[in-house]
Length: 414
Ligand code: IPM
Ligand code: MG
Image 1 (cartoon, rainbow, N blue to C red):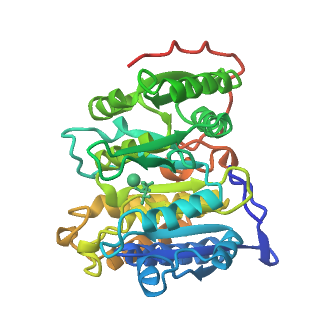
Image 2 (image 1 turned 30 degrees about the vertical axis):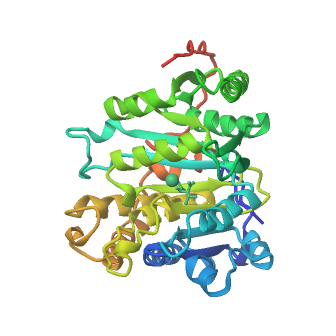
């Protein structure tokens, strides 16, 4: 039913020679429905141009449903979504709903129920996109943050004590299992092998010594199977500094759930803004569908005005195509979106010069140009989820794995 993490497809054939992919779509709240609508239109266009079929089912989940019925993700709907080949999510969150309810009851519920172990958050500064870092050349930011997506502080374990006294205390626990670390590290090494062959573990081993030691020890053990990839280490605070001062230092960053949440927002802003940043939540064992979403929130303040940049959602849709094995369509959609983004006078708001939906029209128009000609190589976003299936790198060459082992780099301490 489900394509494997590296994109080998076991798709049901719709008609002789035509591949069928079943998509679950969760528009969610705020700008979520607007950007997801554009992403779905782009996918439809890609399916016509690249000759595959999509069967999309919408799921009404999010703040409106919760406020209306008190429901978050009923079990039967969870099971139905679990039967899809992949899931696309717009955004979740609403000021009417207290913090934590939708985030835990919906977003984390899906991540946990579908065992979405690896959150892939690529960062690439696209040509002609303004960034907060003055004079940053696009080639200096091309990296992938891999965020462990099921554990850490996100397990919501803890307790409160001494309520009503000045000593009222909250304890919030994090879990870190060898299994989860091994899975994300193995994915990271395989991805790094197809990129610049450098993997950086990002943690805080000088303070979080229990968790940090397990992460460091486990990642080093996994590294032994990938001697052609250089492993190094940075503390998370130093990582933030390096991302601003010399982002070219990073290729693949592997990190824990909370650090990954924070670091990937920083990367998103440096690459031109939250509106541009895509993500994939991958089930790496093929036991449930993977989920693709822009990393921005629901932005209720601008909802309904046509001011949201749909690029993050469309890049996420391109990653979804790559994951499903539609590599030509994925590469073309990434390239078409990057071209359109490069022409925008601003990356969102009224200054964007056209509406959310018009950005979609332009992407679809550009996509048609790729359909009959030579397809561009997979870009940073789409190659980050389909490295082995593609057999080609972002530059288009066929992957080769060096036969001579390079020594492991010494672990850095900052
Ligand atoms: C993200 C978001 C989520 C997270 C929220 C909505 C639960 O910030 O995807 O980064 O914290 O993981
Ligand atoms: Mg976040």
